Image (cartoon, rainbow, N blue to C red; front, side, top):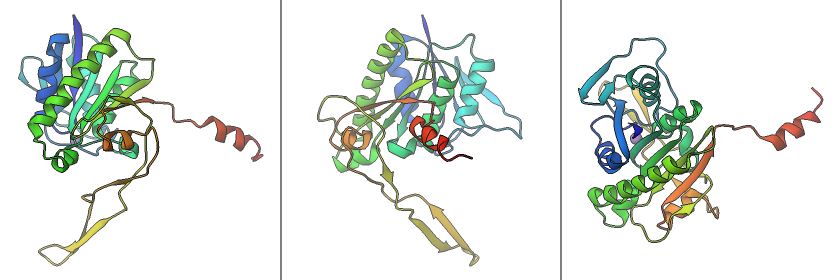
Length: 252
Ligand code: MN
């Protein structure tokens, strides 16, 4: 029986995690190790300077007072009886498209598994798209959960090349077939809200603005915007061979 590890960055109480656990439970023994609160946009951070506590909430479900990657780290090193056959992260309440993968804790948890050579999938639902199409969160989650099952089943059967992972995004309303995509480009416009706190001191608030995206054929952004589930294969190797060759000619 397959051992399936789930994590996320929305925290142990997220409906996305609940839906994912329920959806993939027919595929094997599900273990959950997730942050005790929301840790979105925490990226690949690990906690090096403080103790971490894991708390068992029920059979095979643990929370950790750390980051998503802390959770996967502890799961693999301490909490699981053996290495999982697959790590699934999500289902995130919000798309992770294009450059989002560098900020996302959801994607980071899957990347951590990929670093350890374990097949991994990050799963996200475009909740803004749900609003746009008048769909409820429950409807969107049902679609995303059903597709998560399908992806997990395929990956368990076929595996993934070492040091790769899949980044899956489900649109607010599915209008066509799933598309295999590359990362697109999202622009948040660097909008920063600037206000005064109740004591008259200035503060800034990053995020909140809706992202625009570049129109790139074959990208995850285009696919999701057009109502397709997007599957982007990612690799951990960010090296650029063409630029490396260019640098050879710089004669350092
Ligand atoms: Mn999140």
